[in-house]
Each structure stands twice: as structure tokens, then as C-alpha cells.
Figure 1: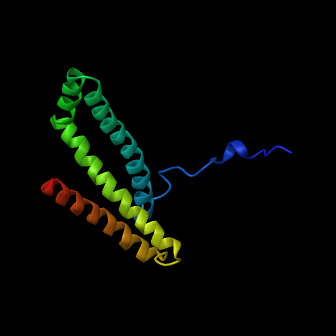
Figure 2: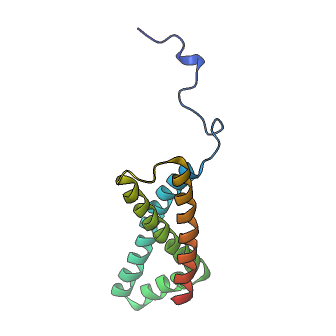
Length: 127
């Protein structure tokens, strides 16, 4: 039998219903960083392929990669790599059954954001 009240209630909670939490934001950031790493990898592959094809193609790719936007993309990619790696370690920690309390999950979420920024700055300074 059809649900007669279906049109009178929301099908799923909307973003305006819930306030953002550290754990939900870190989950979203993990997905965004993983996706952006794929795009950054494609840029690096383009750079390598351009080097293999011709000097002109490499000049074009290298010009982009060494421009300010290329530097910005690679810096953000370094952050995404550090963040995604730290989030993965956090999930491995959770897989042991530890750190699942709300307060601990929030502390580790803030810690991976701060650590990823610090490691990115260290990477940019060293490289």
C-alpha cells in the first residue's frame, strides 16, 4: 500500500537541520582530499607525458606547473596528501575499537587538521 503521508514529510534531513560537527567536517574533508589527489595525480602524469612527447609540450606543461597557479595546486595537493594520510591513520586507530568516544574523535579530528597544515608548511619549506 502506498504511503499517503510521503509528500508531507522531508525525504532526508537537510543541511540546515544539523549544525556542522568536527567529525562530519573531517569526513567531508577526507572525501574532498581524496578526490583532489586524483586530479593532482593527473596533472603530474600530464607533466611526465609532456616530457616524453616533445620539448614544446613539456614547455607548456612545465610553464603551468611552475606558474603561481601550479604552485598553489601543488601546495594544496601536499596538504591533501598529508591530511588524507593522517585521516587514514585515524581510521586505522578507530578500527582497533579505540578513540570512538565523541570527545576523542573531535580531538583527533582537530589534531589531524592542525598536523596536516604543519606538515604541509614543513614540506613547502624543505622542498
